[in-house]
Amino acid sequence: MKPLKTMMLGISVAGIMAGCSSNDVPKCDDSDAKELVLQIATSSLRDGLSKVKVGISYAELEQGVNTPMDDKKWWNALKAQKKEIDDLLEQLSLQSIRTDDIDEKLKKTQCSAELVVGNKTVPIRYKLEMTSDNELYATVYGL
Image (cartoon, rainbow, N blue to C red; front, top):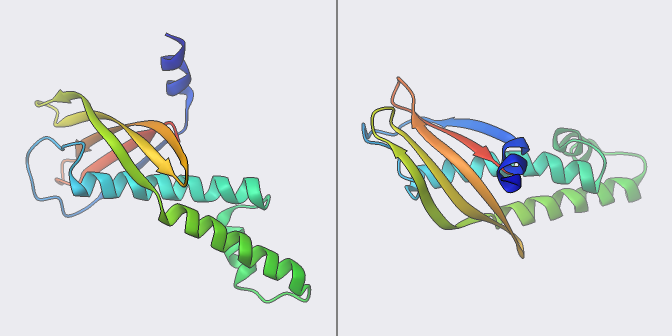
């Protein structure tokens, strides 16, 4: 019971992807679903990594990198940290995608997967559902 409680307290991030043309229940391993989950993970992890590595948000890091500074050593360090973060996040992938539950009536699917970040693997859960506008909506847990 304890792992479930820990998982539910984890960060939850949501996103929408337009253009899904199917009226079917979304599938965990559908390319649009995987792309949306990876976009959400990238967005969430980018800011977290920036705060851990540099002590500022990714937006502040990006702004600092794009604004030349008098202190070239600090500016070059910021650029190097941003590149390291971007390079790491380009490698994100999903493995071991599993369907945990399907609700045909509500067009919702509960999924589990392993998020691969560099040489680390993180278990995540995500919920996929279709909006009334027939857009794919995803909520990702465990980032």
